[in-house]
Image 1 (tube, rainbow, N blue to C red):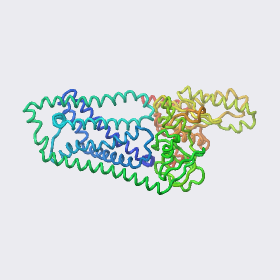
Image 2: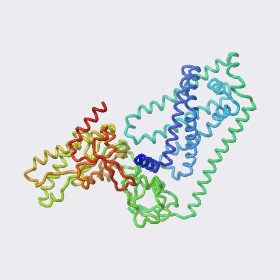
Image 3: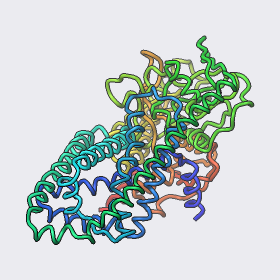
Image 4: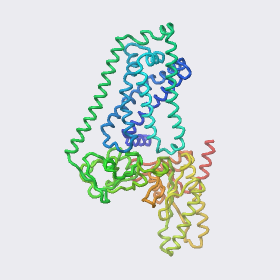
Length: 577
């Protein structure tokens, strides 16, 4: 219960307004897809459209679903208006301001349709369905059909851009992109064709007096007075919405004026570059405004930590980190108060700093040949292994002898990692980081890492036997294994770059490896890896440990002899099968 509460608390702390807007947007886009597919049934017949709309409305007007839907719609619109006010820099990429403009135009375009159908039904009991709407579109004013066409295109493009920003850093996006593109083209095309075919059918049927008697009644379309009332409501709400946008733009101007009167501050980049900006801009926005390259894989959304900067000098006058910034810094294990996120820090006084990551390979604006070079978010399992007693080993040997033994140790470890589907990634002294899951799913990655740990022990046993004549005591090791979402990409400077992973999962794995010294065991496996791999709850001893940089204790599994892990994984696979 305590673990679930801690996870819920951590999830709430890590939720930003952008994520709330994303969730609301996904709900609305699901509605749009459902509606478009219903429109596409017009390619069959109007009767098919009417049959489809029965199931469409039965789901979306089901009270709990309706509450979620309308809440998401109002929240998404409100956050979109707030984004217009909050956004200070629009030169990031053309697609982002385009998405914002398209999103803000949707309420004004959809107002007449929503009021005519939903409010007309609520106030007067109107029963406008496809035959009535298509008749008004095609037999009535031609402006209505063009307005609706523009609305459908704008809503679809806006939603697709949002989905792209959400999925572009996911590991499966490259493989899924062709199918997503096909759906993005086919669904609206079929929907518009369905509306056209349905409209033609309705216009043809409207010549029949009996059809008009059954489909164009007062109960279905309402009276002229009712229509005028709905039009006045539409006009009033549209003017009110446009007025709200005008107030927001005016507020932006007032804010800019106040910032200029409030004074300018100097931002020094630690390389001789200094820019002057009004107070209130984030460091990343200042960099973009003055065309200073600044790393940011996620585009300034606080979904990564690649825009991190280290403040030079006194950092006591800086604003306190926001909840989202504090969450991201905690996730990457940063407790140094001089390290901040450039996309979140809005200094109010002169500031000197330097960037922790080079913008040449990690900038969101960089023209990389492959998406992985600028960063990719995915689930990986990190395995840290460290050689025990290397300091004592070096004290009584010649330097080259010590290097030889350490290299044989790292070679044995790397062989076990490669044999089990992993990738040796970083070598730090006598330790190594291995990554699993670059080409596999999370469960397979966890099982591979556990088997690799068992393989490491077997290879080290062979090495100890081979060097027994030269070792006073066998080589020992410690292993830490943890899995989670990380950012993978090229880190470094110019030609000196290395492909690696950044994130909380990597830091935790390193600390679990270090903790094997105090717990006197060969490996510590996180509960996340144990559960994902499908090992039984009683397979390994459980412990609650405190991880530096985390507020809540973490559940781990202590492994005294890693050789047993391979058998445990095999048993878990048999049970799952």
